[in-house]
Image 1 (cartoon, rainbow, N blue to C red):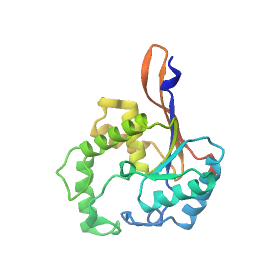
Image 2 (cartoon, rainbow, N blue to C red):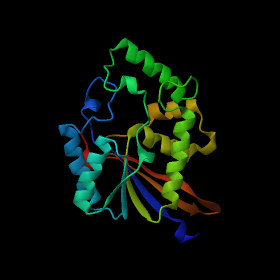
Image 3 (cartoon, rainbow, N blue to C red):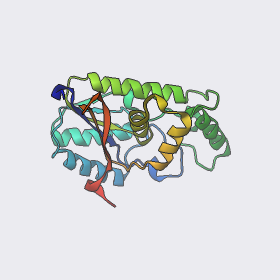
Image 4 (tube, helix red, strand yellow):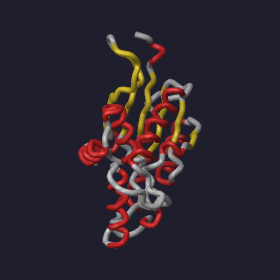
Length: 218
């Protein structure tokens, strides 16, 4: 075993946003709701008990606000990275109602592409693009000089990272869709990845904890 291979990453989903609690396709500019602000305060208190060297966050408002609460509570400097933004939706549906037939049609067409079976829809991220970004994010974390890192990100992309760790090159669009449907990640839930070796195994990313939200159980 090579102790220098060990690295720990705390993946944190942002607090609830206003759009999370609304029947709309979430806008990138949606701020934390009142509940989300309470969740951000709770996860900030929780992270005061965790030793970590670096704090990284998606620059999207709901993640940035959550990370700012953690930074203030822990006095760890915040870095922003586009690698950890949420899946990129078609811009035309941003903030649109779930009952808007045009927005729903666009969303469904894009979702087919997100899981690998449809054409490119506006700037919406495809399956290949999403997995490529997950690979880049994991490599970025592996090469980062810090040994313990907290990352505030988003539910869908967080699950994509976990699915890539668990399934590697065997990950398909259908498997990703199923994983997204069945693996719950609460707002401010903590998922822990470790890059380490094991008996007769080379170092790799390993899932250690999924969706720990004991700090804010409701």
